[in-house]
Amino acid sequence: MPKRGDIKKVLIIGSGPIVIGQACEFDYSGTQACKALRKLGYEIVLVNSNPATIMTDPGMADVTYIEPLNLATLTEIIKQERPDALLPNLGGQSGLNLSSELAKAGVLEKYGVKVIGVNIDAIERGEDRIAFKDTMNRLGISLRKWVTPW
Image (cartoon, rainbow, N blue to C red; front, side, top):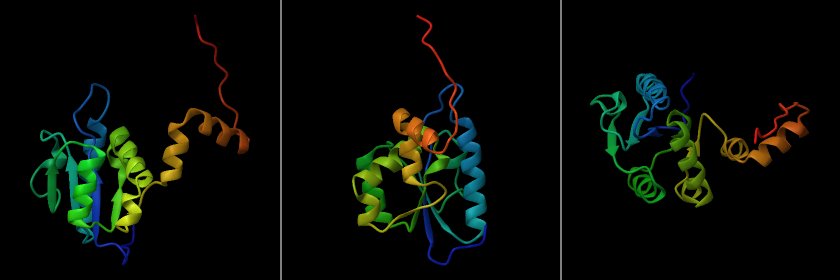
């Protein structure tokens, strides 16, 4: 990935507490992303509510916040840190949902934060089952037929 000149500081949202079958893969990928982005010279601001992850180890990010993953907390961190970009897809469902909330609340636009790595519209279409179905139908992609077993 070539370095973008318009981005100096990147905010990464962690996945929070590990749930069985979820989150450890996001911790690993987030750690690798932090290393790669820092090697390219980006300043990394990491927010995660789980202090027991590899991502929150000293040296993974320039600034690490161990805080609740919610709209109010992320808004304050964005206000204080002024990141140029948000990389939401390393935080699993938590990161995607929070990124969508931040966009809907106008926080990203207010502080000029670009979303990189995934499109907010794609997150919303993927989360809304009806919007997802409509998108697939519009693209001519067939969906599996299913019936409720009861």
